[in-house]
Amino acid sequence: MNTVVSAPIGPIRWKHSVAWLVLLAPLFFLSYGWTNQLAASRGVSESIVFGWERVIPFLPWTIVPYWSIDLFYGLSFLACRTPREVNHHGLRLLTAQLVSVTCFVLFPLRFSGEKPVADGLFGTLFDALAGFDLPYNQAPSLHISLLVIIWWVLVRRASPGRRIVWHLWAALVAASVLTTWQHHFFDLPTGVLAGLLCLWLWPDRGTPPLLRRSHGEVTRPRLTLGYFAGAMFCLLIAMQGGWTMFAAWPAAALALVAVNYAWAGVGGFQKHDGRQSVAVRWLMAPYRLGAWINSRLWTRRKPVPDQVTDTVWLGRLPTPAELARQRFDAVVDVTAEFDTPRGAARSHSVPMLDLAVPSLATLRHAASTLDSAVASGGRVLVCCALGYSRSALTVAAWLLQSGRCASVDAAIARIKAARPQVVFSGAHLTLLKDLSDAR
Image 1: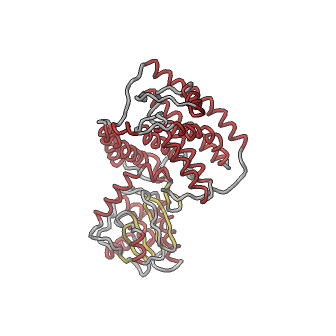
Image 2: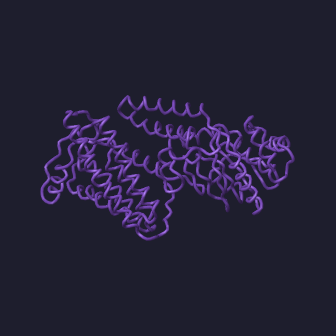
Image 3: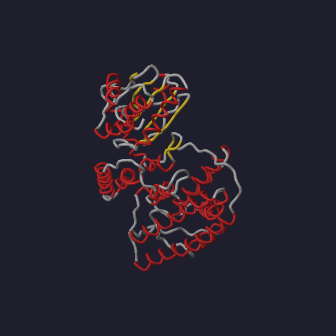
């Protein structure tokens, strides 16, 4: 889970929040009701249900936490204290509605069970729900998508002592969609996926990825197509049914990586201060795991960094344990796909896409960051996934920019003498030459 940092407290944007609610409330009821009626008129009978779901009990009292999300839907805007926070929260809720409604129309499903009769107060709440909610609008669960969005804005604002309350509330609401017999299990992870996608599209920090064109980065069409093909392959597996449906997770992860390489650039990985956003950490978890395993396999015979100068080492991204053993005082991490490891007194992050050429401005920034780290004293590790390309390029740029090497050839020769496995492509050499000429 991403480390939660409480946002600064500011004035509540009452008018701004109410304006969003005036838009969202009628849109929710109109679109949700329309898709329910549309599914009923089509006579939809398809369901996605696992056999083990027969053991899920019907717990009438859980209708209370189920309904509670309606209250917190409106109150969640009170946790937004800046125009950006209000707008992005509203846009997330709106996007979740649009994504879910689209799926309900294109892939309509029905809840297959017959709900037992409840009485008393709980029965009254079930009757109120039945007056509006037909047994359709299943996957992705809009209830869960909205829960993810509301939970995050409440947790992000809450003090450390109160976060556990919101975690428990979210868990209870998530369980209630099953114990009130409103949804089948498949609807939950797809709802989480949709909710996290909304958090990614409208992030807490940085420009929204689809509104941002990678600045100065050289795109890699082959990598884009490769990741897209991998996404399609996983999607085909998911379409076989059963537990293979959860291959939709790596499919989504690879599709987002493809978007990053084709359009959003490093901004799509949403890495700030060495940490990725909660949406990236979960949405791209299958890709991150695969990339980590790949990095360990490629460097299994070369796990230890190599010394390039008296104070600068070059190597792969270390684990916190490795960093503690190696006793580095500072880390300059140039990966976009991983979090910066903790353990050094000073950590610096200049994200770059793997197997892509950064912009000249990014490379200059990386070199300047390394220069500052060196000036602060101690042992400095420059790292990327393997320690063979992005990090080597950064050290070469620093050697040139700081005047420690007079030419590109001299800088590369010095690095290769320390770490022969490094790779400099023709595009890297051109970029380094541009940097050298601009000194």
